[in-house]
Every structure is written in C-alpha cells, then in structure tokens.
Length: 173
View 1 (cartoon, helix red, strand yellow):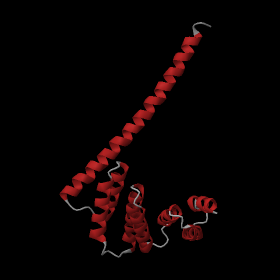
View 2 (spheres, rainbow, N blue to C red; view 1 turned 45 degrees about the horizontal axis):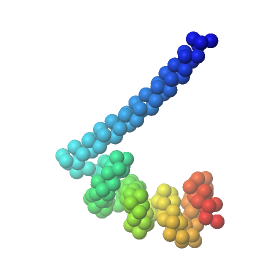
View 3 (cartoon, rainbow, N blue to C red; view 1 turned 60 degrees about the vertical axis):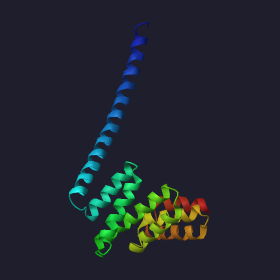
View 4 (spheres, rainbow, N blue to C red; view 1 turned 90 degrees about the vertical axis):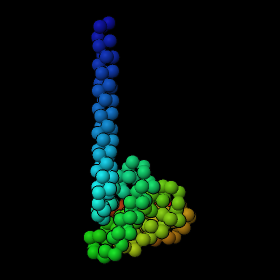
C-alpha cells in the first residue's frame, strides 16, 4: 500500500506533464507555421507585388499575429491594385478584404469605419453572410435594433440554419 501510493501520484504527474508538453509543442508548431508564412509573404512582397489572393492571405497572417496596422496596409494595397478588376472570382475576395478591414476596425473600436467596410463588402457581394452578420452586430451595438433584425432576417433567408443570426435574433427580441 505504501509503495503503490507514490507510484500512483507519479503516474498522474507524468500524465499531466506529457499532456502539458504536447500542448506546448502544438502551440510552438502553430507559432512556427505562422512565422514562416509571415516571412514568406514579407519576402515575396519585397521581391514583387502580391496578387489579390496572396495579399488577402498576408493580411490574414498579419491579423493572426496581431499586426493590425500591417494588415490594414496590405488590405488597402490589394484593394487599390485590384479595385478595377470586376471578375466574379475577385469579387468574393474583395468582399472578404472589405469585411476583414471592417473586422480590424471593429476590434479597434472604430465602429463607424467598420460599418463602412462591412457595407462595402455587401455592395460587392450582397449575399456575403459574414459581412451581413457583422453589419447587423454593428447595428445591434449602436441600438439600431430594426436594422439589425432586418439584416439577420436577410441572413436567415439565405441560410436558415445560420447560428449567429438565429442566436442574435432571439437575443434582440
């Protein structure tokens, strides 16, 4: 009995340490991947101009690294370079860029700017559910419940099972 108790405690400690080391290794793997992606896009942007998809991906990496200013700059550069492109496949990416800029400004508590970019995203793609939900959230935050509810209704007309719209619509009633 006296020998088994320490072995039991050591086994639990070992299990805890193994789990903890696995979690740390996963976090390090994520950090290294993010750093390598950031360096890749940084090098590529120095050597040549980033295309619309690379610019979007670079902006997402910057957001993940919490380099919001860099993400804003890269997003604006991509939009400036590609604003004349009217092809349908670019419209989806441009809408995502506008939405991403809105998200950055929302996180920076610049709701007016965020609203403008969400509206631009919706102008480009009127059925872009993420931007519709984000704009509805802005209206909800500014106590414009009727507009928020109308946008959530639009989202639910597009995707009836949208969890965000369903949850917020129930909450604001």
